[in-house]
Image (cartoon, rainbow, N blue to C red):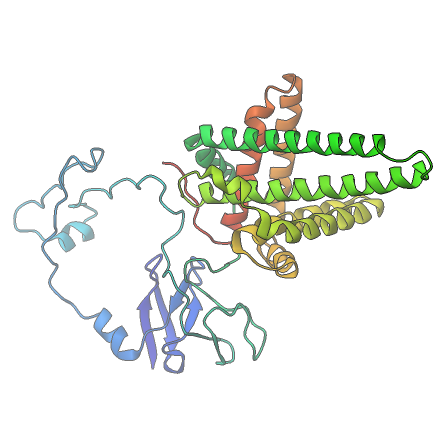
Length: 367
């Protein structure tokens, strides 16, 4: 006997065999996670009960929502619905910084049952240990690869940036200023090192050693500030209050970010040498890796793996975003660099928002 139940996201009526009761699956209509209820739960869900008396909110809370229109005469709401009428007021507007997907539980479940082979897995597992099938994790923070449209992602990036334009520009400029100051100190130390070297020492060997140390220092400095910058922008994209101290808290992620950027540059460069197209492909597939490493605090290999999964359904959209960013940078350059004050932080926020939407994570839209 089949179990009938409603999708919690789109309310579509779904059917499943009794042996799948209690398991998790995905709705074929909207793609959101859905749990097959026990047979008793499904029966209770379809039991007819009298409608509860609605609780009206004060009009001042949602000024744009008109007052409910009572049904005429003795007709019920079901009668009005069947006749095409509408005896209810429209839904209130979405609150500011609301997530762009239904909320999920804060903690992972104790276990997730694979809908394909029935193997029981740990609650935070991403793939079934029995058959390797991707698992549906619907707790807050789980990575769920999600197809994203170009217009929706671009609009979401602009909304998040526009709502926090001051902090975004301030964080971008402050991070750049810190880099310039530290870079200047490194140059000073290098010059002083040359001046105090004994004339009898091989000057060429000393120069190579000092330049090598300076290059290592400069790379580490850039990765440290970049990791802090990603933490700052990821927090804003998730709806948190801007925290400028995050710009200086990139140390735990610096090593991973450095390895990711070096590996990314090597792959893209090598791919570009082979007819360009492989380089462009690798650049699109793995660009979210540093964002994943910082935002989800995972290892270098995990970051590349997650980046490949979440971009698998979005490569056309990513190519469009890449072209749009190139056009914005070209326009900013025509403005003698002044446009970079806007384009620079906006493109960082856009990349962060695109990554979070592809990963199925909530994004604050500022509306």
